[in-house]
Length: 430
Ligand SMILES: *Cc1c(COP(=O)(O)O)cnc(C)c1O
Image 1 (cartoon, rainbow, N blue to C red):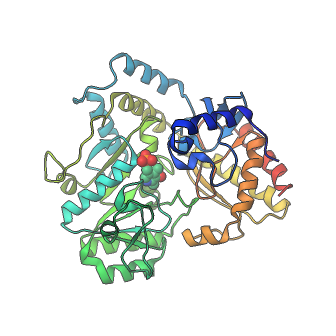
Image 2: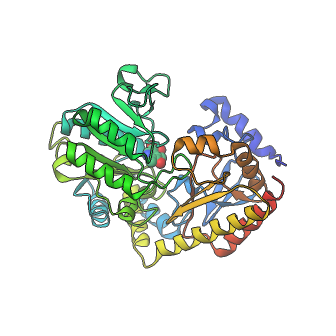
Image 3: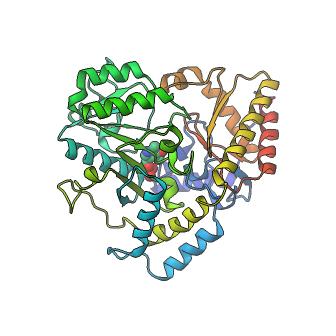
């Protein structure tokens, strides 16, 4: 069924000559679905265009940032105007203050923040800060949550659930991984057992408050309440990694959706409007431990980059506009309902979930609650076939069964209907 895309094939081969694996981030290589990646020429609104001129309705949106749609006119104008004034100074600019003020206004749990250049830097720095603040080394993370590629976080559970962690990547020292405890997501019992054993040794718990890196998993409200209570009782820093969910599931992120106040929050993806930006922030008392105020070191030559700050400001003006998240939610609901009806019609086991502008689709008959459910119950082969069938019909989904999908303000109901019709056709051939 897969179309041959000769230009993409040549471009991929050319890329492999001097780029390791032909890509600058592994998921782009299509290893999870097979075939050749689509090389993008340009994008506008809800559409990306490959180098052969094929148009695709895009549900990846650069893995989240493109919430306003690609090449949004006002954002592009802001970037052009900023570029005219110079690309980077390594000195403070007023636009950094504007962005910080805006974020603190939108996310009340943040008193102070720092800008970084990626989500990885934000989570890595937040963890160092939690360790510096508490004077403790151990951290807790959850299976299936992704927090970037720093050493402490590329760790899985040891043989017993509360054993010390083991690296998931070569090159991560075991001595490093032993400070990371990995628990099953959305499991209050495991969390409680962990706090009983290690509570007073833990610097922080870090999690995706809605998981978007094991497809999409929405944890129970009780899980969040237990996290907040246990962290408070044991003086452990609760870090919400909202790199994906921030300004995506709601204007105030997952913390607003659940009504839970973390101690620190990390951002990335959306806040840069497509430029490389991350941020971390939270309680004043904790954030004041960072240099030059305190003894926890963190820095960045391009942090608070003026292009990114000025683009971000314009983007926030749009995001805070009337009804944007309501409209995104309505569209995701419309789409996942349509997909479900089409799957049911053809007898395909299929489940969906969504919050705000983010949704998940699963080839299984029961919505997964954690990573093990996603990995063991969902039919990855069926997904790969579905993915390629949709791609051939001009619908661009994430090339992996372990990724969430994203809606933008630029998607029209006509685009959604086209997507549902394409799915109906592909389901009939699965
Ligand atoms: C993408 C992502 C990161 C890493 O951000 P990068 O900008 O890719 O370094 C961290 N946490 C979560 C939840 C993410 O989705």
